Length: 383
Image 1 (cartoon, rainbow, N blue to C red):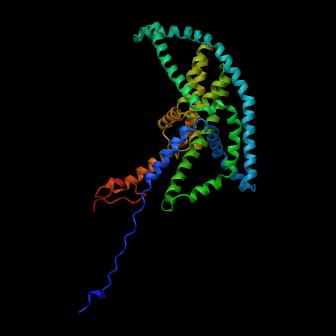
Image 2: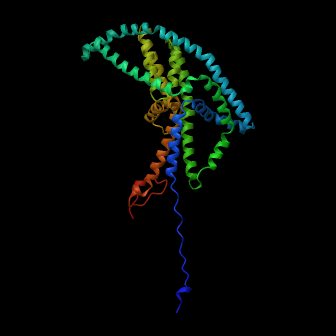
Image 3: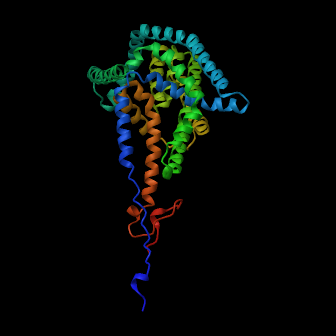
């Protein structure tokens, strides 16, 4: 008979429970938001420098492949970018200021001529469609415009007052190039250091999501910046060819505002049509202005955006507008600069979370959990 003391029973030790890291992640995010809010008055040059460095990093990488050292490539790219910005300010800003000054001086006359031009047309429409009288409409329009103007004024004041660094133009001029140079020079080193700090069991997942965020940002920021530049030049040249007064400033502003969906085109079209109605005798001027913006929209929708931005961005226009408004309201001008990168990161993380949810038992219940990459994870057959 076997003695029970001679029997060795080995028990498999259960692995220790994995630490729950999400409270630490939430705490780090909370501390980061608090620091951004408290330091928003001095962050503008640093955020701008980070944005410029991110925009120019591919150029430095290309120069490195051609045999330049990282420091030499960074110096060449930074100096070239600074010269381009300085030349743009020296050549374009004085002309824009002259046109803006002339536009403000001639605004009362333009409004009066537009009123005389549109009054007969409105009277015809009022009789046919039983519209309110012009005096009542003018009072209603003035009240609505007053409310909108007050809201815009408060928003602009909040943005300017919320970013004290914006008032200190010298800090933006002198600190941003320094930040850009050092970030460009050490960009790969910073990425490598951050990669070494990632938790090892989640490193691959975090790298994949950061790569998706980088793809989204590269497609939107670099691509959209090129789209804005091309459209600004197109609108400015087209409106000047048409003969529209102040066509240069209106076209450039309409192109630069294209990064806000629909705002650049609509605002430029409305202002241009109002000036065209007040400046041209016939209807050929307004029609030509409408053709310029129509061709610009066709160029953007069919060629520029598909080629330069692409479908991989995945940022809905409403989400971008909300991010810009929320960032400006919470963090001032710094919030405007951070709005699109944060919106891109949130969009990527939300899509990642939804994908995990669709492959989890929480979604399938007692059904089979779909494998990653399944086309219809919600149609798994029960066991």
